[in-house]
Length: 296
Image 1 (cartoon, rainbow, N blue to C red):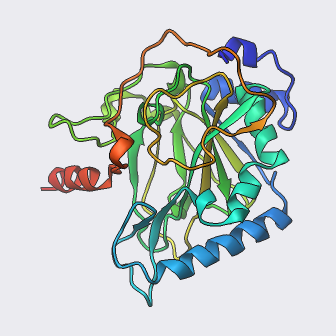
Image 2: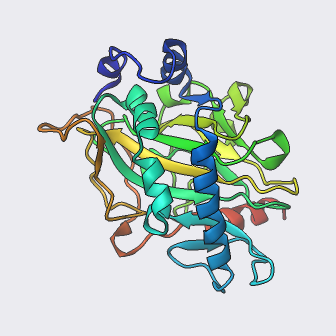
């Protein structure tokens, strides 16, 4: 569904002003929208995941580990597709509140694509370079949105997500380096840093992030981890045309409304990612190599 039609839909959960901010700036934070009941359920599931990670010695397709991870001192970077690891995550991602939040910015018929739980671990959780998301999983339009749930309060010293306002209205950038490594990194010279906006807030807040918006996060310098549950939805008539980098049996599920009979097409082109059909390779190794070279 294209933006002009989505904007005509009356919002279900967010305010009209918040919806306007999303389409104008490319992101909006809805503070304290998720109940303590949900937060308790999701935190408990996350704690179980952390306990399971103690047995993991090196990163794999599901558990991405931070440097220094061990059985006695677990340090997680990411859990891929949390919906496949604990029922609580799918219960929330397919819930009324999640589907309403998504519907308010993608239209009344909502389709689930993928999810991840980024931990941004205490005392050095990895930074993420400036990038855009949609090049990783192109769709036939630009309706996809990421919902980022704050499991706990998020403050400036924890490396919160930072977005570049209005960047979703600009060009898509090359996510490969000169050696054709998939780095998901945009040089700062390419956009106006004066338009950067930091997203901090209380537990239960949800950030709605447009798939074209430039964003990043700094390392976590605090002694508190900053877990964020990230779930991607699109309009039901928006069709992915490359392999899902984080596939799940739930991918493609209609979580609100009805299945589409016709596909929506935005005429603007999109860069293609590597072939994920044999497995997803994250950008961190190449980003880290680039950052190390920049310091020499």
